[in-house]
Picture (cartoon, rainbow over the protein chains, first blue to last red):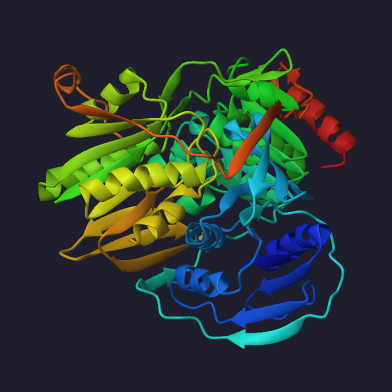
Length: 287
Length: 240
């Protein structure tokens, strides 16, 4: 049994390694820096469009199970590898265990309304969600590798500039159409500043209306977040949005419509105008 | 020259909910949200370059959804009927049909709203032997290559050779609402029916409700009082 752990991201590499250690067997890793979470780590330079060349390299290791992180580049790598291996797949896996010659996994479906249990034939390629577990330290033998050339040319990379990263923020203030206008987003920004939090938005206000940069989108096709406190301002709460905030500890919604879908998915619903809420809240916090 | 748009007919996720301890998926169906962006992008390629735009759908071949896709401007649709298919099976079904079409470009959504695995585009690209660009938010086509902006946390501009599989995000365009005339005309467009079945590598054992119990406390009073009450609650929760 050979398990391969792969991620470009340190948190995801740790999370994936922990899942791998629960399965047992020989654990190999691929990560841009050295790590003792695995028996042996292959360290490539992740440059240019590296996902497909890395899949090519990983296929030569002949893994039975591949556990990858969940960044978009991790997924592109993992499922290209899966296509090469003609393997079974699952993404966003919460837990995994071996049962005979199958891998049993659980993962959310239908925008997070359900949890599916799947029985995967080996070889299997899965991506996992982040966890907070600390894996054991293993040998961590290091081998540097050169990747084959990609047919895809990377022309430019604009690194996302996030003031406070949505990924790590303890408090997120998030805006939807109900804020009324782009100009009004400043109230949410001021509130977030006072709470030392980050600002995000629903798909309409990020991808469609441009009130906030697209990398601030929260939901199924944007960022999935898990803050301590999520404040949804004027967000109706479509399933695609809920899918991105489900793991938040406490969800507060401010909405004029107390029957909006968000009311079913929040801990506290303040019925009223989001701007007025911001102004009063800012007043309280500035004291 | 042709471009293929892949789409999936799924239970409307705004209607899927937990009823009596079960996830009720026997609800009206629709084209998966971001698949409409894929169709729109294929139709734009057709309008700009004069390529033929062909839709391919696998699984539920609901007539109304297929008409919706044709109304948006696809020239024809290949509807592959199948029962439960996993990603590998779906990729095989698509690959068989797409090889027959031999398009320059295959456009699909980065994820569907039912299983949201995000695995199909890379998997399919490998089986077809096409190049892959995932999470594309803007696309331009040259003679033998494409230039695309990818939304992967960072924004990457990449160039890839054709033929290619491209997965798109919701940001790439706003899907059009067809006119009455287009809806009428869609009835005359060809729909080819095929059947497909395969043994899944990933067997669906069960789907259980995912219950995150939220408190659902409604605070409806003048804003000054509402905010005070909320602050008290949040201090009690230890998050403020």
